[in-house]
Amino acid sequence: MKTQIQAAAHDLHATVTGIRRHLHAHPELSFAEHETGKYIAGQLQQWGIPYQYPVAGTGVVALITGEKGPGPVLALRADIDALPILEKNTAAYCSLNEGVMHACGHDVHSASLLGSAKILWDLRRHFRGQLKLLFQPGEEKAPGGASIMIQEGVLHNPAPRAILGQHVHPPLEVGKVGMRPGLYMASSDELYLTVTGRGGHGAMPHTTVDPIAITAQIITALQQLVSRQADPTLPCVLTFGYIASTGGATNIIPNEVRLKGTFRTMDEQWRQEGLRRLTQLVTGMAASMGAEATLKIIPGYPFLHNDEQLTQRVFGYAQDYLGPDNVVELPIRMSSEDFAFYSQEIPACFYRLGTGNVARGITSPVHTNTFDVDEDCLLHSTGLMAWLALQELGNMQ
Image (cartoon, rainbow, N blue to C red; front, side):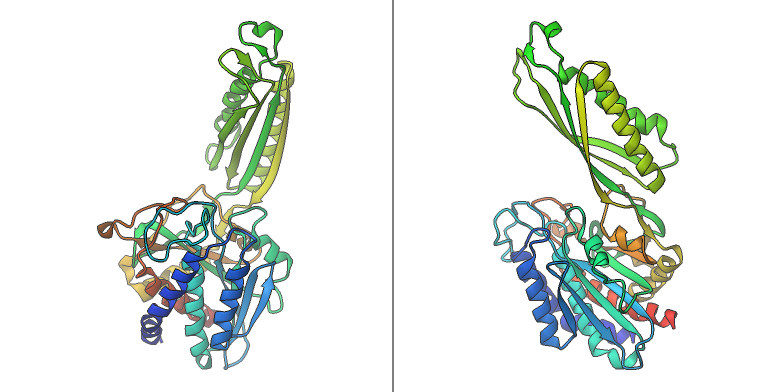
């Protein structure tokens, strides 16, 4: 079966590459992937694969049933949205939608899952069980398309016992994959903080309530939330990446300072407690200095947990398919992914697909305007996911 899948992936490579290039040239932002969803549905229809569209607004769900009987169910997931980035690459398939770019590889994920779908559909007479394919919108934007798909019932009727997902990873050379059992990625919540004082002349600070000076003290104090109040063995990050005042100049103290930041950790209890303490600290400090602070928290994604037993099995399946030297264990990441919502519901394995090629200069990180992949990765991504799916279905029997 492995040789058959590898041959099928090779035969499909040009087709999958074409799909990826079409998606890359026509990116759409989170929850606005109308043409993307239609395109994916059209490809499934062309191959005769049963599907449901739309799901969660613009998503697609396909179902492949083995001809040896319905049996257990395994879900496979790809995300379909792009980012608000102006592409700077010069390839023929560059984005035609100015200011929108597949800079996180979701075009690769979607094309790969379509290729895996075609392989699995052609092999359906050989297996028992069902494969539920989720082409999910809105990964890049809270509340996350995964949470909406779950609300709309994608984990029921039929209910998958587990779910697999893959993501491009430029630091890994093409031909390799990486994964990590257990805690893998952090939760993320968005912070919007406003500190309001009383502006005035910069030469007469005693007549003002200086929100800039107060904000500086708040930022410094907040870092102790991580360094002195969080368990030092627990990963935790608090970052403010944006600060601006409403007015102000060399000799003008403004009325207000606004900040935007993120709070990330890998423990749901500390996540809630940390946010509570954060709110208490900023409002209390501002009030003690005569100012007012308001903090808006937009809940993001939970932490991503790779089921230990499932991930160890997938690690072995991948070694069998790619070779032992081409499967590596990855470190914990403090970035976040809405695949985490699935991992909170059923056993999950989220792994990384090598897409880099140093010799060819393909090294740009995700979320940059020069991101691209070595398209040989599509040979491995398509066949590998089909192989992992059939191996895990067999384990479920």
